[in-house]
Length: 192
Image 1: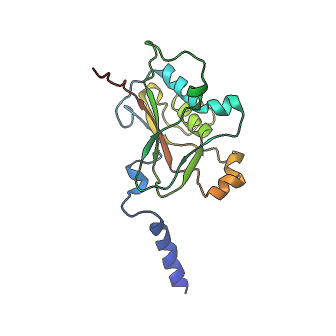
Image 2: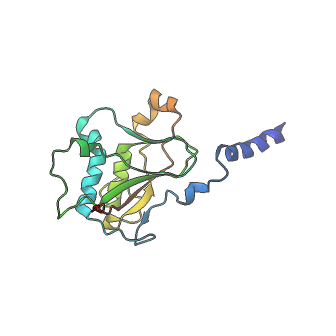
């Protein structure tokens, strides 16, 4: 009986993950600063990068309503989604101008697609702030990516009580499996 239990303990985790997907979908949660330790330098406008990240955290900092989650449900592939920017909808600041065009794109990749992954948008924003060295709690960051752009698994604050609410626990979601990227967004070509 014991040998059957040991066998099942070794086989069950493998059955939960679709066999055709590589671990981490070919990319892991490690930090990569483009042009420094992998990838191509994105040559971002740092002011626009900071402004864009502020749009992600806007609801958390200014509205004081329940913190929103960014959720990537189980799926068949390793999709990438644009990260929502609640502040962009409610902003009264001027739109991008010629000196600071909207050239920053924030993406999330589901690196554990067999998992229901859900993280606070606040943790997403804090992870991006770590790219510019603007977060005292992110002391484990090896590089400051800054204007180069980069990617990294979302750095979750496991002590945040929102991860222990009855609703979150009942969802079966895990605060892992999402990697974020900051890349250059090229302007759309105008059609003639």
